[in-house]
Length: 583
Image (cartoon, rainbow, N blue to C red; front, side, top):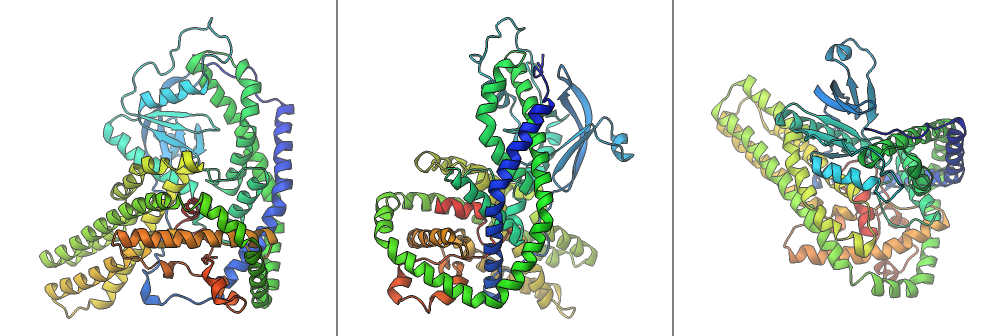
């Protein structure tokens, strides 16, 4: 039970993987350097561009999304042959899962038996579903192992399982003692997987946006167009996933037939081999990016010094180049859009709008319930201690795993509808899209809570009695809820390239496509009678300079995009949801 790879990675194999990563970095880093310049220009243009009126949006929450630490006893399937053994599990605040032989080992600060970053994992709580996935990894037709012993791996039912599956790593199989413990671990692990996966998308650093754009362009140069989930994780984890995807087919063909064992034991051995390959590739990616870090820091500082004094000139130059490109490609592009986009766009727009609308409805409901509880406690119990406790609980709503799960379930229910986009459009970034929607829900809740608490603090005074204070809170409640619908159209927000021919060319094409998306969403939103200020969502610092270069007719032929960082959790749609619309 639990066959192992015929041999671990030898020195030659590890060197081969390092060489593969070195080659990837040599091809990727020039693209990354170029996107760093584009990202710095975007940030400076955004800083210097017109700002939205302070009263037109929710306040930004100063609390950053965080992984809720969790710990408790579990049993784990491990060893050779694999068997269930008791452990003490600890989920760290950085999204790393560790396991110890005993709780005392953890409390004494000893090294864990094992650990893993949760990036890229999928959590399953159904043994049948996991076994179906495991059986599909190594079909019986691959190799002749009929002489092996019958399958016995995981043949005994597991009452409260927690299976962590990864496309390029060893699977982790845990079991909780009770259904309640399983539920608590499920919420904690799902939160860790999401926040660990979207670390780049949530970053406000120009380098993060530059990295994501560079990965997309690098993969386009390799012939990969469209969206998938490869950009989940840190920069090193993303490059590791890129190389693993490139090498996976060859790796399977070379090593799978030689694995010992049969059925699930053979599949288990395959995931252990993948773990060794993944570790070697990740080490190479981390070393390469670490070596590039001093150059990147120096380049960012230099770009800031050189771009900021000349930003107006650069933006005018970009506008002139974009105007010429727009004129040159207008005919063929319009023909392409009519033939391949216009017929499909209503379906795509409505599918995405349905998802965001359902999510926003749940956020509004939870927020209204929380504000009503505060007002109710104020009327019924003037105790300062009790009220402070309730205010604290209200402020923690965005980070309450059980409460926010109501929102997150809504996005999970949308998987079926969103999955319908895969076949006609080749969209494979389903997990990224779901995570982006969940990040959006959490950020909207955090901003709304922060807004309510600040407005309440401003309007409440010690001279008010309980009824008067509750009445003022009711007015604040109405004001906060009124602002929420304005963000439903923000899935249109987009990133933009800077002064490279390829980047400007892509912007022009996306601008024309965004005009159609804008028109279709306004049409759908109008039909649904949903209030949404789409025009306010499409800020365009680029267009401030283009206005001097274009005629009114030319401006009408394009839909501006927002060149914001796009890498932070904010009411504007996260990058993966934007990319979905563009695809």
